View 1: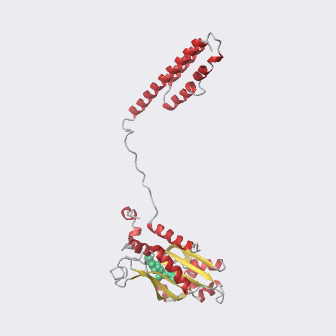
View 2: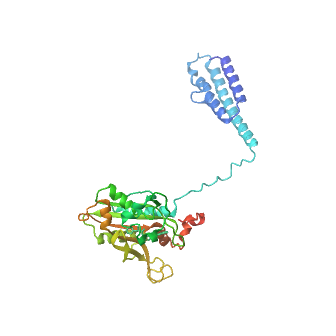
View 3: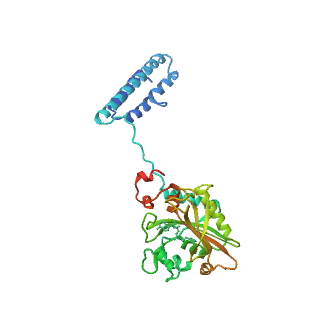
Length: 336
Ligand code: FA5
């Protein structure tokens, strides 16, 4: 390295710094000349290899060049930043950033998952089925022939060729039993449809169906499982009761009530002064249903239940109009 070569290097560096148009390119130049493996850095590092008479003068010049370039690059960076600011005068870098709105799960999805998790802890696994269902799975295989009055309570939307929008999740019982051998324990969550609309009914709502089939399943197993479920959702203090009921696909059948969440049994408007609120239907699987799926009724017994998710959510959160869940007002949804 001679003094002339050093002077040429300086000339090139000054020209390039002068010509640079943006901060990123300037950074590259800094690395090129002053970085760890930069051209000027290399000269400073290798002074010791020069002939002794050249060392002091080249050493001094190289260090001066290093400082000169550092200073130049610093000032050029300021100029470039100022120019960028002048071009976009509205940009105020001190303003706080815009907050991101964080979304969350719909309350019905939250409760649905919570309930599924409770039954999964009891050894039930999740099964699913289609929302457009055949009349056979939705009604006939569940012991509800075409002229059965139980159909009136579950009017739905019909398509040609025996298809309909399912009115409950019970057809998943049938589909599961047709494809799997007992013993089994399933819960089947999903959307269902009925020709209903008022403060306690929507045309689309969610149900969870439960089914357990084994060699010796009794009504007390059903009561044990459902009582555990109710206490997990509504609190261990909550009392439950079973009332006789009727479903064509279970015998005997029952409905389960929980103690009113508002008056705790004393009687109020929500529970119609009875102190109790109905939350689900249940019963021992009817032998005709087992016959429809080819299960041996002498060998297998089972219980089934079905509950409405919106109703559970209404009771848990004290909501008096089911339609609020589907009006999509953020003020309502943000509370959950
Ligand atoms: C059934 O749907 C039976 N499949 C339940 C069952 C399964 C019984 C297995 C026995 C064995 P039900 O029609 O009562 O039963 O409906 C069950 C629940 O769905 C009701 O308790 C109620 O909470 C809810 N529900 C019914 N109709 C509506 C509606 N239009 N909107 C919101 N929730 C509803």
